[in-house]
Length: 540
Image (cartoon, rainbow, N blue to C red; front, side, top):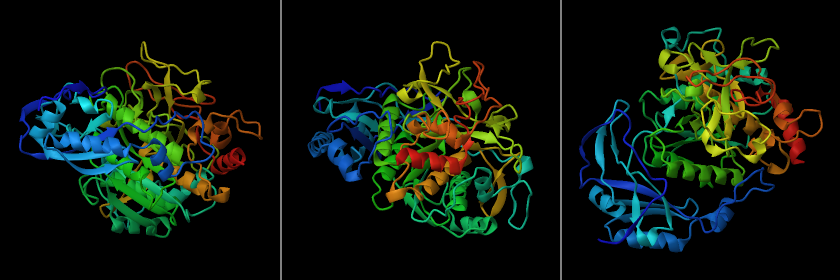
């Protein structure tokens, strides 16, 4: 076909550094892509928690895609030999299936197979183009390039943390209830609450969870594993520890809750599929979602169209009354990149999430506050680790962070969104979490433990709010007034300030803890009962 086409904004791709072209992709191979379409009307940005959440039906009716646009995409793409195999007004998606050659024709692109140390992939370079009749309708195309984009937070197993038999014990492994005591969580067991988890590899294994619950002294929760794109929900690929850590932290704190685990591929399309599944899940309707995966801003991993569309979906979560907790990263201010600059992790840098940093508990039984998590040189590659945090190079600073004066250590950087918003224990050695995986116990940690811990706290708070209310979009509330009690902000009222430590792993520098908000611990570690009281007052 010779239909004129238009460049798709934000679709520019480069080959991954170090990638080597193996050859053109098989022209007859069949692949699927997901298209994100425009909304019927723009979804307004939020600078505060919505007074009343929208239902999924209301969100779709007002701000979803139009059926006319879906039909138009189906008709135009059929002319290229592409078949519509799924569509959603609410998620604004059309899924297309067809041969590589048909995809190349439809989007004016060439697909190649690449070899790379972190995994071979099918990829592309340059921009995508869409047929002229769809130039105002299609906002993103995902799945042509299937490079891995999200990295698990799980740190490599060290010699000192060798997995041990289930019958073994270790005095420095702590179960979630001990963290709940440390952080003064409100009473509750999660009854009536649903916690969602996004996972991009690994699997859920009921046997491991049962053994964990036995050791933690809690009942077995209801866990539902959902494959959002055909990804296995029971892979033993080395990432199962990440999945089980997320599940076990929530189970240990909310054993009567329902836990829904959404599995997707390690790709841009997979991240979008996982988020869409949680947003559209009327059956389970999670009140809080935890994500322990991500990748640095400013790399050849994310495209601008992906970051934009993922951020739009996270905005939908805020409108739906869903709190989204995201791990801030485990490699300090560099976020494991070696270009010398500081980087923050995405989607932790989205203004619509509760970004969770990491701390170390130096005195588990005493009153001393946590310190910023920094082990070794702060890099997992060197058997260390440290909390992510800093200033976004992509997202402008929200109005609710206007009083924050922290500036980026990168030269010429924008006045971007600061992360994290809050923090909790992440240390692997001084104050590790108990993990049961593959039939063994081991110490674990990272911000990927801190994120589900905060998600469990939100679920417990939701359980105590009057009239079935949910905390929802908590993040801007943390930076606003606390009401009675004398604290300057709700974040200060509901958290214990962390004032010691830094996350310096980048040549450009890093960020340090201090009095009040900082870009390594946010407002600090949870003081759960105080946070509950402050939220109840704010929502009264």
